[in-house]
Image (cartoon, rainbow over all chains, first blue to last red):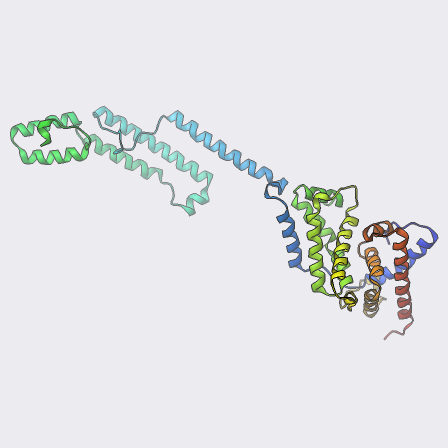
Length: 202
Length: 183
C-alpha cells in the first residue's frame, strides 16, 4: 500500500487490513477499456483542440514548407530578371515580323526560351518529382523549345510586309492576276491586320 | 514525456498539445476504467460512463489548475458522473452481480484462488455504494484518505469510516474463505 494515510494507531490498523484485501484484489482480472473506446476518447480529445493549436512539436514543419515555397518563388523571379523578358508568342497581338534581323532576334529568343524551359522543367521536377511524374504529364521543355525554333524558321522565310506589298504591286502591274490572288491570300494569312494600299484591296 | 507529471501533461493538453493527452490517457485508462466497471458491474454501462467521464475531463481542461492534484480532480469528475448515473437509474441497479472477477493470478498471489477473488469482487459489489466508492478509490485509484474525501465531497473522518466498514466486511469474507478447505 503506497498511500499517504496518516499513520496514527487506527490508521495503521486500517492500512494493514487494506493490504490483505489489496493482495486478493490484485488477483482480479485487470479489465481495460476496449480499443475502440480508447480510440473514441483520443479522437474526442483531438476534436476538442482547435486545429490551429494542435501539435506544437510539428509546427516547424508548416513554417519550413512556407519558407521553402517563398525561397523557390524568389529564385525563379530573380532568374527571370537576369535572363530578360520572355519573348511574346508568335501569332499573338503585337508580334510582327519586321525584317531579317528581327528573325535573328526571334531565333536567339527561342534558344533562350529553350534554356529557360529546360531549367524550369528541372526545377519543377526537383521540387515535386512525384507530381511531375504521376499526377500530370511531364514538362517537356525541349519539345516546347523545338516548337518555338520551328516557328522562328518559318517566320524567317517570310518576306517583310513592305517588301511583300511591293511584290504584289509588281504582279498587279504585270497583269499576273492568278499569282496576285494567291499571293494576296498568303499575305493576308501572314499579316491579317496589315493595311494594304487601296489599289490592292479590291 | 514520461518525466512530466500528470499536472504538467494536463496543462500542456489544455494549451493544445495532443501528445500530452495521449500520455496522460495511457497512464490512467486502466485504473479509471476498473474504478467505474467495479461500481456499475456491466461492461456496456461502464463503457458509456467511462467515455462520458473522459469527455467531461476533456471539456473541463481549461478550468484545470495545476495546484490541484490531477488524480483527485479526474476521479472527482468520474465519481460525479457515476453518481449521476445511479441517481438516474432504477433503485438497486447498482447492485448487479459483477461477472468480471476471473483469472490471471500473478505468481505472488498464487495462494489466492480465482474463486476467492471472485467472491471478493462479489462482496465489493454488495457493499453500500458509498463504501464501495471509497474502497475503489483506494484500491484502484490509489488515493489517500484526504483525496478520497475531496473526491467524494465528505469529511476525511467520514471517508475513513466508510473505508473501515468496507474493509471490515471484506476481511471477514477473506477469513471465512481461508478457513474453508481447499477444493
